[in-house]
Image (cartoon, rainbow, N blue to C red; front, side, top):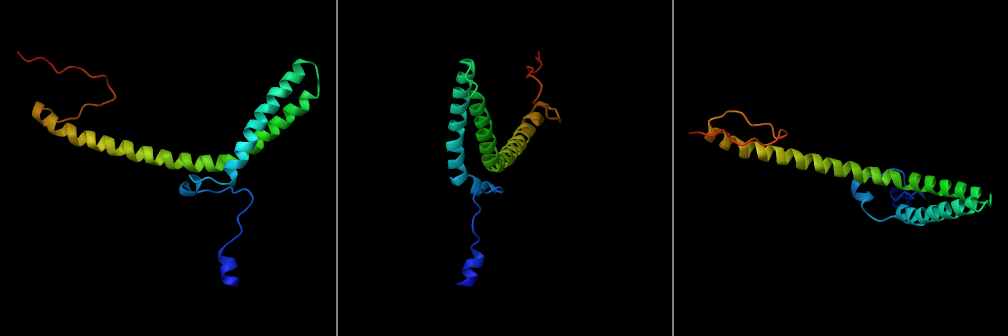
Length: 132
């Protein structure tokens, strides 16, 4: 029983380190952000309204809104960074595969035209020279 307890560490209330697979799953941090985000927007809306009506208690609502938004950012940002890093890696792999595929496809066409180089794809397309 003691091995089982030591192998299953207690999950912290707010997890700050994520890997990409775990970050894609719904967790407590998502629910915290779901509650805090609209709460902060409502406090902003009500605080600004109270200030415009010269009710200075709106400053406390704005302070609460900033606190809620900051805490929501602190909770959800590590998870978003993990997902974003994984997505950027996938995009880089895809672009690399696409560029390799284009180079392989362009080489036979270049050989058929009698050119030995592959045109830079970042330049605008120019029509091939006319032969008479």
